[in-house]
Length: 315
Image (cartoon, rainbow, N blue to C red; front, side, top):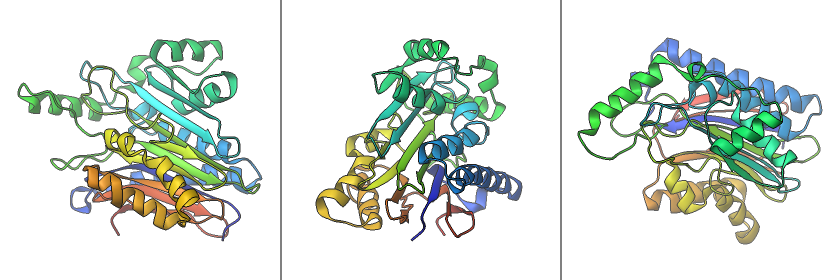
């Protein structure tokens, strides 16, 4: 087993090679490689798993292709509202933010919530006030504007025909969406695990909707005794199934190995509820698992002694 390693995802959904151009696929794979390499370097140099997952997520937050940070999708009223969470498997401490609009890298703010406050989850104006106090890098609204995301919202609005509905950010059965929530999990040389997740939420969402990404145990979880997990998909189902924690619980209380526990969490309760998506996980021994029940999931890993590996489709 590797002494250390990192696993990432960039979203899961209706992703097909038939509708993917070679240029776009190349751009996604390059983004995944950059994210993996940045996190792996920290681990190789003796850095901690928290730093590694934070940096890997930072890279994807800065790439407009992914639905996080600069690439965040638009809500029904044309705003960008972002969520993020990070968890330390060594201490079970966690930090999260929800509904922030001007934070360049939401995962950085989530870590500050964990380390500089007595809370776990801050939201909206309060979270942004906390960010100002701690000098977190902010950006104006137009930084988060991309033509692709704006056109996506217009398409969703045109399809509504008076119905109240939202579009799954990672894709849906009606269209081949090529973007998604991002996340990373890592094991460092000291045996510590960490998980991080960041998202722009759902296109065309209303009413201040918050998904699973910033919910500890639903979209993000880490425990040195078991594993670190980050999920991606239809958040309402991941919350109802408490998917991220379920993987850890199946290992701790049922004695399952990581792969069996991760596959049970995705192909068992989540799928039975009607949820779609996937997860990435790594355990304290360096085993990894990347199950998903959708046509594709942007994913990759870079383990000690190996080379960076990426995949998109159900290969």
